[in-house]
Amino acid sequence: MTTTEAISLVIASLSLVLAVVSTTIAVQLRRSIAERIAQRAASLERSAPDRRPLAAVVVNPTKVGDVGAVRTALDRACRDLEWREPLWLETTVEEPGASQARRALAAGADVVVAFGGDGTVRRVASVLAGTGTPLGLVPAGTGNLLARNLDVVTSRAAEIAPDDVEAAMRVVLSGIDRRIDVGWISVERPGRAEPDPEECFLVMAGMGFDAQIMAGTPEALKARVGPAAYFVSGLRQFNGDRVRMDITVDGASHRRRVRTAVVGNVGRVQGGLALMPDAEVDDGYLDLLAIGPRGVVGWLDVAGRVITRRTWGDQRLAHWRGQRIDLVAELAQEAQIDGDTIGEATAMRVRVDEQALVVRVSSRATRRPPRAKPRIARALPR
Ligand SMILES: [Mg+2]
View 1 (cartoon, rainbow, N blue to C red):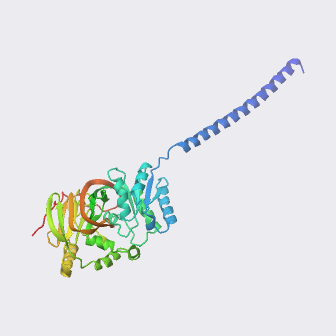
View 2: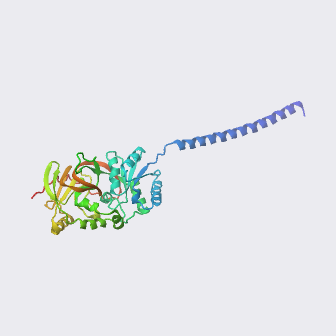
View 3: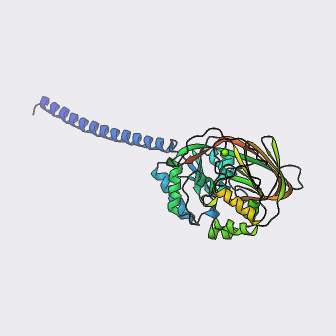
């Protein structure tokens, strides 16, 4: 081998070594860059905000049977429809829903669900009114009257089943938004100078017979036999005295002797009975029934008029419509707001907040066509 050949061989060997080394380095480098990119992407994914929408569920745990099963059903509905895991906020006797709804708004919830009866619904609504954030309904009470009046499906079973919870939640997550009126009520108490703080109602509030029935209906009976419990209690209140009441509807005053006066935002009560057949939940007016029959014949007449939808124009059953309604009773009366008994009141002053609340309803819910503005405050003395 000549010197030149030897040098060539060394150079060739060195080139080969260099080629191998540089290839190895290049491969290592590529691997490490790829790893770093993957790590960076993963960390970005972890730190990026979850853009899926969020539902908060304000739940009355006393109305829910198997909490574990219904939470699984709610989570499944959210996951299937690509929502985040829902916030779960339980109510207590001291905090029946408003503070939980405020927490839900602070957490940025896209919809706040009231999972309970009409009492839970109105507490959540009192916070959502005027915010534009929709209220969702998973009905689990005795009456569920708002849900029934809005054609949101409700189970007739005494205890809501996980399947019903999931179906209702799917409506909440995929339904349409509808604006409804909110009633605000200020209650005056016997022996107290200041009225209570204003409270929200969505169904009906009243003084007299209806509140006596609710006050006389034990929770245990409601849980066992459902709405029929009110009927049992109603029979016991049949023969009470009428009370003189000053009723003012948008400035027009009327004096009546009544067993009960009920202000309604919706018209249907238990069993599909239309107590105020033409009450509309979004017309910007509240309906008022003042009922003052005497004896069995009087009650039968009132019942007949309600069933045949002739509520206008009678002494025993007076019907008005207005935006501000004051009821002032001569004697303190049992009072109720959306089925919650609130003790005795001497006066209720009510106003309507037109279409202040957005409610999520089923896209299949039947909607009646919009009507002309209603007859206003039809006075009916004869
Ligand atoms: Mg109305």
